[in-house]
Amino acid sequence: MSGIVLTLPYPISANRYWESRAVKLKTGKWAAVTYVSDEAEEYRKVVKQIARDAGVQLIDGRVAVDIRLYPPRPLDWKKRMGKDPLAWDDDVRCMNLDNARKVLTDALNGVAYSDDKMIFADSGKRMEPDEGPARAVVRIVELALAEHPQESLFEDLPLPPPPARLPALPQHAKARPAAGEDDDPFGPAAPRPARARKPKPAPVSTVESVTADVKRAVGVARAMQDAFIKGGMPDSDAWKADERRMDDIARMFSDMPNDL
Image 1 (tube, rainbow, N blue to C red):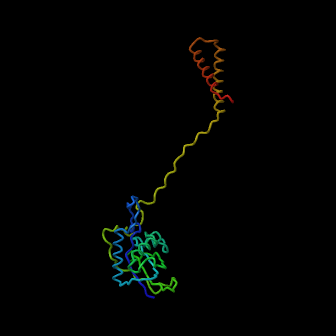
Image 2: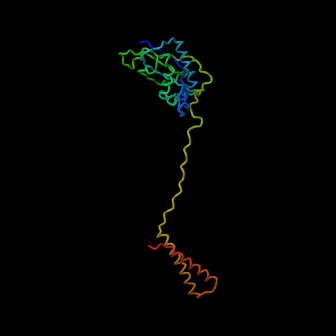
Image 3: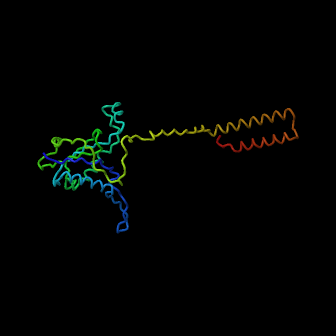
């Protein structure tokens, strides 16, 4: 089975491929409109030129698409491989495979196949970074109407060797992080300290409050009684102070609840 094999530059982020803005309609209402960004248009032009140079003929029918995504290899890849030979590239920066599929299938729409609605089977795999540049290898085969898509469709389309270089994207495109810069330079975020809560004061019942007032009043009354027994009815400033104490006692009892 014949098909198309294209080695394309590493796709741009889906967040930069589409843009949205608010547009005022004739009715006076505002609506959000999503469109392809200028950076995405430049990526489309590069993909179209690569397909034209490869002699790609437009497939007008059902197709199956397979994507192999090669992320950029970091500079410390040997150190990472020494620590974990089997899964060293798990934390290598790589765009989401599903987002890569959306960008690539849209860029190839009208170039390799007539419409992306004719993609009846698709598959993808994130590859281990190699010595080649970051890239995406896309394989496309035409499906016969009586044929059911199976994984064996791409067996006779071997993956090409890594290229020495790829066409450069326009300079105004946002630069991707260089190899080895996938680690956060600021390190992990520090945990937020727990806020200390002030202990709530123990509730004091009405009975306890009144009991304390009564005890204080009894203490004052006993002190006045001792003063009277020892010195009689003093006609001095001390007696005036005791009189004020008695007024305070009377005020305490007048403020007490009636149901106690």
